[in-house]
Image (tube, rainbow over all chains, first blue to last red):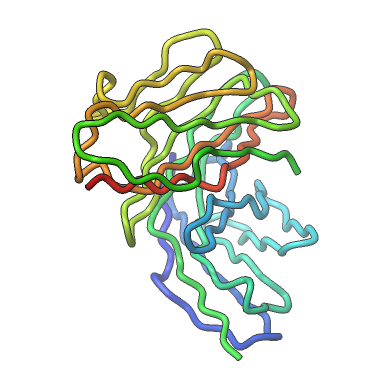
Length: 114
Length: 116
């Protein structure tokens, strides 16, 4: 699986958009970009994933550059409850019936402030 | 989304004793479950992958005789830390994969183990 690079920490004011970058310059054509977050002392929570098109769901938007070497997770209106460590993971998507491991890096610690 | 529970949520034990942690998928059948360990201020490290009805696959450096994994049913996997020592104190997290949906893992809330 391709390695990812994320800033160790970021701050964001409540109500503003939080833009979390991730570099994955060695990503291969069949690897997806996944984002998870972990609120303190809880298990990770899935946020979103994508291959090459931008994706949006009720939690966030994922913007992937055209060359797929980097991506940005956008929380449109950050709240205090979004304070967490955000993990960007790049891996091949498994087929139904197969087990694919998730390899967590160090992530970005997002602190949302008043 | 699917729910994964862990029990207990925290446990304190004496050095040398064994501790069992349960991981349950509440509303789906989990053909595969994963066990992770997380030390303070560090990221999650995968310990092992367990498939229902077969032996677990352990990551390099994880002692299979110390961390016993049993995945006896499609909704339950257990991790037993045998002869626990203070260095085993950590946050243990399981995840479960819904076999009907490609590549989706749901994480449990974690179990904090403290060995005195």
